[in-house]
Amino acid sequence: NAGVMQNPRHLVRRRGQEARLRCSPMKGHSHVYWYRQLPEEGLKFMVYLQKENIIDESGMPKERFSAEFPKEGPSILRIQQVVRGDSAAYFCASSPQYNEQFFGPGTRLTVL
Amino acid sequence: GQQVMQIPQYQHVQEGEDFTTYCNSSTTLSNIQWYKQRPGGHPVFLIQLVKSGEVKKQKRLTFQFGEAKKNSSLHITATQTTDVGTYFCAGLEYGNKLVFGAGTILRVKS
Image 1 (cartoon, chains in turn yellow, orange):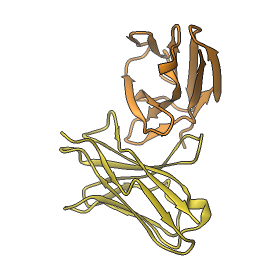
Image 2 (cartoon, helix red, strand yellow):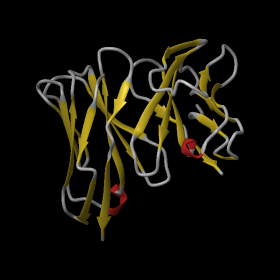
Image 3 (cartoon, chains in turn orange, red):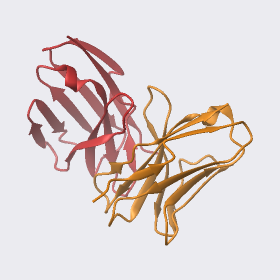
Image 4 (cartoon, helix red, strand yellow):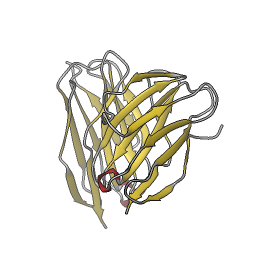
Protein backbone atom coordinates (compact mmCIF):
# COMPACT_ATOMS: atom_id res chain seq x y z
CA ASN A 1 0.00 0.00 0.00
CA ALA A 2 1.73 3.13 -1.22
CA GLY A 3 1.88 6.08 1.13
CA VAL A 4 0.55 9.55 0.50
CA MET A 5 2.00 10.86 -2.75
CA GLN A 6 2.66 14.50 -3.42
CA ASN A 7 4.03 16.12 -6.51
CA PRO A 8 5.98 17.97 -7.41
CA ARG A 9 8.42 17.70 -4.50
CA HIS A 10 9.93 21.06 -5.37
CA LEU A 11 8.28 23.85 -7.29
CA VAL A 12 9.75 27.18 -8.31
CA ARG A 13 7.49 29.94 -9.52
CA ARG A 14 7.92 33.60 -10.31
CA ARG A 15 5.69 36.17 -8.71
CA GLY A 16 2.32 36.29 -10.43
CA GLN A 17 2.40 32.72 -11.73
CA GLU A 18 0.13 29.91 -10.64
CA ALA A 19 1.18 26.97 -8.49
CA ARG A 20 -0.62 23.62 -8.59
CA LEU A 21 0.17 21.09 -5.90
CA ARG A 22 -1.11 17.54 -6.13
CA CYS A 23 -1.83 15.00 -3.47
CA SER A 24 -2.88 11.37 -3.87
CA PRO A 25 -4.11 9.97 -0.56
CA MET A 26 -3.43 6.48 0.65
CA LYS A 27 -5.68 3.83 -0.82
CA GLY A 28 -8.92 3.65 1.10
CA HIS A 29 -8.54 7.10 2.69
CA SER A 30 -11.37 9.49 2.00
CA HIS A 31 -10.19 12.40 4.16
CA VAL A 32 -7.55 14.79 2.86
CA TYR A 33 -5.95 17.70 4.71
CA TRP A 34 -3.60 20.41 3.51
CA TYR A 35 -1.12 22.18 5.80
CA ARG A 36 1.43 24.91 5.29
CA GLN A 37 4.72 25.03 7.13
CA LEU A 38 7.22 27.87 7.21
CA PRO A 39 10.86 27.04 8.11
CA GLU A 40 11.21 26.03 11.77
CA GLU A 41 7.53 26.69 12.40
CA GLY A 42 4.52 24.53 13.08
CA LEU A 43 1.92 23.12 10.74
CA LYS A 44 -0.87 25.52 9.87
CA PHE A 45 -4.12 23.86 8.89
CA MET A 46 -5.46 25.10 5.59
CA VAL A 47 -8.30 22.92 4.40
CA TYR A 48 -10.03 19.59 5.00
CA LEU A 49 -11.72 17.80 2.15
CA GLN A 50 -13.59 14.63 1.44
CA LYS A 51 -14.39 13.40 -2.02
CA GLU A 52 -16.00 16.26 -3.96
CA ASN A 53 -16.63 18.24 -0.78
CA ILE A 54 -14.80 20.93 1.14
CA ILE A 55 -15.54 20.22 4.79
CA ASP A 56 -13.50 22.95 6.48
CA GLU A 57 -11.55 25.69 4.75
CA SER A 58 -11.15 27.95 7.75
CA GLY A 59 -7.37 28.00 7.35
CA MET A 60 -7.35 29.01 3.70
CA PRO A 61 -6.56 32.59 2.73
CA LYS A 62 -9.70 34.15 1.27
CA GLU A 63 -8.04 35.10 -1.99
CA ARG A 64 -5.82 33.30 -4.50
CA PHE A 65 -6.02 29.90 -2.76
CA SER A 66 -8.39 27.09 -3.66
CA ALA A 67 -8.54 23.35 -3.14
CA GLU A 68 -10.46 20.48 -4.59
CA PHE A 69 -10.70 16.72 -4.21
CA PRO A 70 -12.55 15.43 -7.25
CA LYS A 71 -14.31 12.11 -7.53
CA GLU A 72 -11.46 10.83 -9.67
CA GLY A 73 -7.85 11.87 -9.38
CA PRO A 74 -5.71 13.61 -6.80
CA SER A 75 -6.53 16.49 -4.53
CA ILE A 76 -5.26 19.80 -5.89
CA LEU A 77 -4.16 22.87 -3.96
CA ARG A 78 -4.06 25.82 -6.31
CA ILE A 79 -2.38 29.13 -5.61
CA GLN A 80 -2.99 31.88 -8.13
CA GLN A 81 -0.74 34.90 -8.64
CA VAL A 82 1.86 33.67 -6.17
CA VAL A 83 3.76 36.12 -4.00
CA ARG A 84 7.03 35.67 -2.11
CA GLY A 85 5.13 35.13 1.12
CA ASP A 86 3.64 31.94 -0.34
CA SER A 87 7.06 30.26 -0.22
CA ALA A 88 6.71 27.38 2.21
CA ALA A 89 6.41 23.64 2.47
CA TYR A 90 2.90 22.40 1.76
CA PHE A 91 2.00 19.05 3.26
CA CYS A 92 -0.93 16.89 2.42
CA ALA A 93 -2.21 14.27 4.85
CA SER A 94 -4.88 11.62 4.54
CA SER A 95 -6.79 9.51 7.00
CA PRO A 96 -9.49 6.86 6.80
CA GLN A 97 -11.57 8.61 9.43
CA TYR A 98 -11.02 10.99 12.33
CA ASN A 99 -7.84 9.48 13.62
CA GLU A 100 -4.17 9.42 12.76
CA GLN A 101 -3.11 11.30 9.70
CA PHE A 102 -0.56 10.03 7.24
CA PHE A 103 1.54 12.77 5.73
CA GLY A 104 3.02 13.00 2.28
CA PRO A 105 6.61 14.13 1.67
CA GLY A 106 5.48 17.69 0.99
CA THR A 107 5.94 20.17 -1.82
CA ARG A 108 8.53 22.87 -1.25
CA LEU A 109 7.33 25.97 -3.04
CA THR A 110 9.79 28.75 -3.78
CA VAL A 111 8.54 32.01 -5.22
CA LEU A 112 11.22 34.11 -6.89
CA GLY B 1 -11.33 28.86 18.05
CA GLN B 2 -9.32 26.08 19.57
CA GLN B 3 -5.68 26.82 20.35
CA VAL B 4 -2.93 24.37 21.19
CA MET B 5 0.13 25.74 22.94
CA GLN B 6 3.33 23.77 23.09
CA ILE B 7 6.45 24.44 25.12
CA PRO B 8 9.35 24.73 25.01
CA GLN B 9 9.99 25.96 21.49
CA TYR B 10 13.55 24.65 21.49
CA GLN B 11 15.45 22.21 23.65
CA HIS B 12 19.12 21.37 23.40
CA VAL B 13 20.20 18.41 25.50
CA GLN B 14 23.31 16.37 25.97
CA GLU B 15 23.00 12.82 24.75
CA GLY B 16 21.75 10.70 27.61
CA GLU B 17 19.75 13.47 29.25
CA ASP B 18 15.98 13.39 29.47
CA PHE B 19 13.62 15.59 27.45
CA THR B 20 10.03 16.67 27.97
CA THR B 21 7.65 18.71 25.83
CA TYR B 22 4.28 19.96 27.06
CA CYS B 23 1.07 20.65 25.24
CA ASN B 24 -1.96 22.63 26.44
CA SER B 25 -5.28 23.10 24.72
CA SER B 26 -7.73 25.94 25.26
CA THR B 27 -10.60 23.46 24.98
CA THR B 28 -11.35 19.89 26.02
CA LEU B 29 -10.09 17.42 23.48
CA SER B 30 -11.54 14.25 22.03
CA ASN B 31 -8.05 12.89 21.64
CA ILE B 32 -4.49 14.08 21.30
CA GLN B 33 -1.92 12.86 18.82
CA TRP B 34 1.84 13.20 18.71
CA TYR B 35 3.97 13.44 15.59
CA LYS B 36 7.69 13.60 14.93
CA GLN B 37 9.28 15.43 12.03
CA ARG B 38 12.92 14.86 11.23
CA PRO B 39 14.86 17.77 9.70
CA GLY B 40 13.86 18.05 6.05
CA GLY B 41 11.24 15.35 6.45
CA HIS B 42 7.51 15.12 6.95
CA PRO B 43 5.51 14.57 10.13
CA VAL B 44 5.16 10.95 11.17
CA PHE B 45 2.46 9.76 13.53
CA LEU B 46 3.75 8.48 16.88
CA ILE B 47 0.73 7.85 19.05
CA GLN B 48 -2.84 8.77 19.92
CA LEU B 49 -4.23 9.22 23.44
CA VAL B 50 -7.95 9.08 23.99
CA LYS B 51 -8.78 8.42 27.63
CA SER B 52 -8.55 10.86 30.51
CA GLY B 53 -5.31 10.27 32.43
CA GLU B 54 -4.02 7.82 29.85
CA VAL B 55 -0.32 6.94 29.84
CA LYS B 56 1.34 5.10 26.98
CA LYS B 57 4.93 4.05 26.47
CA GLN B 58 6.98 3.36 23.38
CA LYS B 59 10.44 2.21 24.43
CA ARG B 60 12.07 5.38 25.83
CA LEU B 61 9.05 7.60 25.04
CA THR B 62 6.27 8.15 27.57
CA PHE B 63 3.07 9.94 26.59
CA GLN B 64 0.51 11.29 29.04
CA PHE B 65 -2.97 12.75 28.62
CA GLY B 66 -4.25 14.95 31.41
CA GLU B 67 -7.24 14.16 33.57
CA ALA B 68 -9.19 17.06 32.13
CA LYS B 69 -8.20 16.08 28.57
CA LYS B 70 -6.74 19.52 27.96
CA ASN B 71 -3.04 18.86 28.32
CA SER B 72 -0.48 16.28 27.37
CA SER B 73 3.22 15.60 27.61
CA LEU B 74 5.88 13.60 25.86
CA HIS B 75 8.91 12.50 27.84
CA ILE B 76 12.01 10.91 26.33
CA THR B 77 14.37 9.11 28.68
CA ALA B 78 18.09 9.09 27.93
CA THR B 79 17.97 10.89 24.61
CA GLN B 80 19.92 9.61 21.63
CA THR B 81 21.04 11.43 18.49
CA THR B 82 18.31 9.61 16.57
CA ASP B 83 15.73 11.50 18.66
CA VAL B 84 16.62 14.76 16.90
CA GLY B 85 13.67 16.43 15.24
CA THR B 86 10.54 18.44 15.92
CA TYR B 87 7.83 16.95 18.08
CA PHE B 88 4.29 18.14 17.49
CA CYS B 89 1.21 17.55 19.51
CA ALA B 90 -2.13 17.81 17.74
CA GLY B 91 -5.47 18.08 19.44
CA LEU B 92 -8.72 16.81 18.02
CA GLU B 93 -11.81 18.56 19.29
CA TYR B 94 -15.15 16.81 19.26
CA GLY B 95 -15.28 17.31 15.53
CA ASN B 96 -12.85 16.54 12.87
CA LYS B 97 -10.16 19.21 12.70
CA LEU B 98 -6.76 18.47 14.11
CA VAL B 99 -5.05 21.54 15.55
CA PHE B 100 -1.28 21.31 15.78
CA GLY B 101 0.93 22.90 18.37
CA ALA B 102 3.90 24.91 17.13
CA GLY B 103 6.24 22.03 17.93
CA THR B 104 9.32 21.58 20.06
CA ILE B 105 12.63 21.36 18.24
CA LEU B 106 14.92 18.87 19.94
CA ARG B 107 18.67 18.98 19.36
CA VAL B 108 20.91 16.35 20.92
CA LYS B 109 24.62 16.93 21.44
CA SER B 110 26.77 13.83 21.38
